[in-house]
Each structure stands twice: as structure tokens, then as C-alpha cells.
Length: 639
Ligand code: TSJ
Image 1 (cartoon, rainbow, N blue to C red):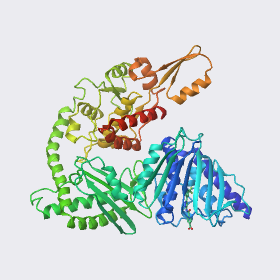
Image 2 (image 1 turned 135 degrees about the vertical axis):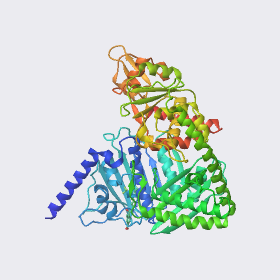
Image 3 (image 1 turned 45 degrees about the vertical axis):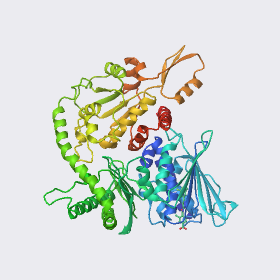
Image 4 (image 1 turned 120 degrees about the vertical axis):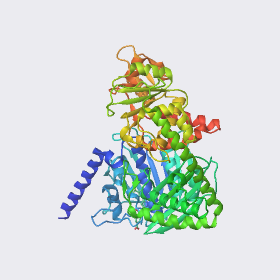
């Protein structure tokens, strides 16, 4: 009887394992670098949960030389005692899908995260996962390989390998190259997420080390100022209008915290987090905050006589003109919806955010009239510009509705079936010319763009709209654009299923891609959410062996492999730019759907692009060069 139960359990464990390894995307989103990095966050989130429960103050994350990742915390240590099912509790954590909740006495679960997976998924997708749990006076050891336990138990329990007075959990795992397209973690993304976590948890210390290079890079993230520090950091290079306003409270068992500060720019940046998870698509907490904020400002504006009886209210977008804000809530049972399952859906979160923000912000403004007046001043400016822009915009779009080929630059395709059509945005006239010759004109359109397009992160909307390249692009796509002021974007009108950025694999190319991504991110984010934006990946080399077929090599790793495989003599041609390829080569390597490589742009890429654009555009030249260089190299490897 006991044996049967045990067998049934191990069968279901194996089935779970197989399910995860068969369809990893279902559990971690994708098997690209994003999915790979997701493994780290999935593990770290457990330590953050332990912090939220009040038992952990330090988390260490190490990227190891062998490609593995180590995560250490000083929490209570995963329970190791015998569980009712006859195995150590820890074994269930790592072998049962969605085990978390069973022993989880933390109030707030991060398990409602992007894909709601757990440590068992990371385990199933790792060549090895090694565990040391310090608690009850000992270090307990366990180990899995591709999800299967390989550590012998003694009397049904984990072996104690050492005495200790400490407590905590240490996990080291190596992602399986059989599963992941690429197995090198992207440090920049890990760092940015850890930094974010530090801001969201002011009493937590997070240590990061990248031990993979010649020299170890070590960073200690510690942000005692929390959300206030976060907003300051977001605004660090901006002209601010007042001190950061902070508010905090609880309603319906939901903890709500926020901070905001206005800058002298026509730009709104409101970030939402639920249980430390970033909500790229916003959600109910954000709506609740925005709605109450608009009401508060309109009420004050009338009270102060800034809005007269005959005046219309400020719109929400007016009121948030120049606002940088972070809203972070802790919800006991979060639900997510939306294209990327990052939009908070709980109605009570809207109520709680609105109640806490409403009460606290009014209290603040009652005592800080200068800040209030500065904020209302931003809204007034926005309302004024909105009114004149509404006119300008209608004129612009009306005039150009049917003339998007007017400046002769767009070579449109013949088909009007959007699901088949593609538009290549090509840097430079010479590459543009080759692309026009090379393309399949039935369904491929070419839009050459020259030089650097406007940095939309900095420019106000009228400048953006005045830019010729941007105008042509908006007109070509056919779906308008959206900014704070109204929302005229209509994705159903999109004329192309794929928008493909084709830029050189060098510094300038990386720069222009970054600017384009920023433009899309700010004015047409749905294009990215719905997966319409791609980056073309031209090859870096062409290898021509003295005997045999020539071959295009898309990155340095491919070149390395090629060198190992081909013992004979071969000539290597390095492509410096798209312009070096004739139209036939360009077609074959970069445009032909049968043989080309495209990288689908994910919202995280665009968010990163947008946040670095400002730095790229700054006046300090040295860090900027370095950044572009590092990322240009990255882009080469990241295929
Ligand atoms: F994800 C994971 F399981 F791999 C993992 C868990 C990874 C890492 C790096 C840390 C952790 C983890 C789990 N750190 N701390 C904990 N804590 C518990 O699991 C724990 C400890 C004690 C009690 C209790 O009720 O006494 C409850 C829990 C959930």
C-alpha cells in the first residue's frame, strides 16, 4: 500500500518533469535569453518572499564561470523535515509543480508572477541543481540532475554535511543547453532587476557578482530610501519641479505604497509593481491611482480658482504631464491578464490604491501648497499645448492620409493583405537602395531612413511629429500613434504584420535601433506587445572554403564552430555593414524568410532601450561610447 502510493507519486513527478522539459515555453515564457534569465528571478523571488515574511535581510546572486548561477539567502532555510508523503519537505519544493503554497506561510506570494512557475521548473530545466540548507544546527545537502534527485538519503532525510550556527538557503543551478537556445545569462538585465528589487525592498541588501570574466564584477544594491530613491534615480538627470512625494498605507489587506515627482518635460512615466513584480501593462492599481489623482488635482484647481466654472476639467494626461511615479502594492492573491500576463486584474487593488493614494496625497497637498501649485502648473501647460496640438494633429494626419509616398522614400509593397506584408526600416540610402532591388515587391516594403532620427525620449510631441522620418513611418504603418493626449492608436489598421529594423551590426546601427525602439515604445507600444517588431540579423562573416559550399556566419560563436569543423583553407570575408552586400547577398542573408534571421523585440528590450536612450543622448561622451560598444557586441552575439 505504502509502496503503491510512493510509486504513484514518483510517476506523477516524472510526468511533471517531462511536461516541463517538453514545453518549457509554457512555464517560463520562452527558451530565449529572456526565459533563461527568468530562471534566476524565479529562484531569487523565493528569497525575496522570505524577506517579505520578515526572515531574510541579504540575498547574494553569483553568475559562475561554468555558466551556473548561485543564489544565497540568510532566511530560515527551506524546511528539510520529513513530510507526510515520506520524503524531505525540500524534495517536494523541487519536484512538485506549484509546490510553493504548501509550506508557504508568507502573506504575499510572488507566485502570481509572469508565468506562475516555481523552483521545480528551474530544477527540471537545469543540468544540475545543488542545494545547501542551513538550519537546525546543520548544513543539509541535496542535488538533482535534470530534475531527478541524485543525492542518497539517510533514513529518508537529507545528509548533514557540516555543523553550522547560521540559517539560510543556497542554490546553484546550471541551465540545460538541451533546452535553451543560449545559455549565457544577460548580466545587464539581472542587475537592473536586482536593483529594482532593492528599491522595492529598502531593508534588503542584494549582492551581485559576475564571476565569468577575467575580473569579477561586484555590486552591492542597498536602497534604504526605497521608492523615494527609485523615483530620484528615474529622474536623476532631469530638471525636477518639486521634492519627491511619498505615500503609504493599507486597505482591504492590500499594502499600497507610492512615490512621485514632476519633471520639466512632456512625458509621463508611471510604473506599477505588484508583490515586487513589474507590471509592464499596468493594471488596476495604476488605474486606481491615476483616477483618484486626476480627481484630486481638478478639485484643488477649482478650489484655488485656477479652473473657473466655465473651464473643462484637466484630462488625466494633462494632470500627469511630467509625472514620474512608482506604485507598489502587496496583494495576497494577485491575478494577471493581458498580452504578456503582466497586467494586474484584481478590482480590490484599484479600490485600495485609490483609497490610500487619495487620503495620503490630499493630506500632503494640504500641507505643501507649493508642491501642489507646481503640479497644477504642469497640468495647465499640458492642457494649453493639448488644445493647440489637437488642431495641429488633425491637420497633419488629414493632409497626409493618402500621401505617405509623397517624399518618394517609401517603396511600398503591392499586397494590401496586412498579414502577409512586411516593412523593412533600413539605415542609410545605399543599403536602402540594395534592399529595394533585393526585395520581393509583392509583400515587402522598404523605408530607408537617413542619419539619426530624433531622440523621442527628449523631444516634445510637436517636435516628434515635425520630424520627417517619424512622420513617414507613422503614415506608413497606418495606425496613428498614442501619447498621453488621447489615444488615436488603432492596431487593427496596421498595414504590415512585421516591422523589421535593419541596421548595421556596429555602433551606429545599435544606436539607430535603440532610437527606433524608444519611438515605438513611447508612441506605439502595442506594436511591441503584439509582437510586430523585429530586428534583422545580418551575418557578420562569409566563409569561402577552397572546396565546398560558402557559408554565412551570423556571430563569433558560429565562426568558432566553423573554424573547428573546417580544417582546410578558407577565405573569410567580414561584413562591416549592410552596404557591403550586393542586393542578391542582402536578399539571401537578411531578407529571404527562408534563410534570414530575425529577433523578435520584446517589451523588456524596448524598456531597456528607452531607459538608456537618455544616457546615450547625454553630453558625457566616454560612458556613452562604452555603452554602445558593449551592446553592439552583445547584439552580435545575441542571435
Ligand atoms: F526556490 C527555491 F526553492 F529554490 C529557493 C527557496 C531558492 C532560494 C535561493 C531560497 C529559497 C528560500 C526558501 N529561502 N527561504 C526559504 N524559506 C522557506 O522555504 C521557509 C522556511 C521556513 C518556513 C517555516 O514555516 O518555518 C517556511 C518557509 C516557506
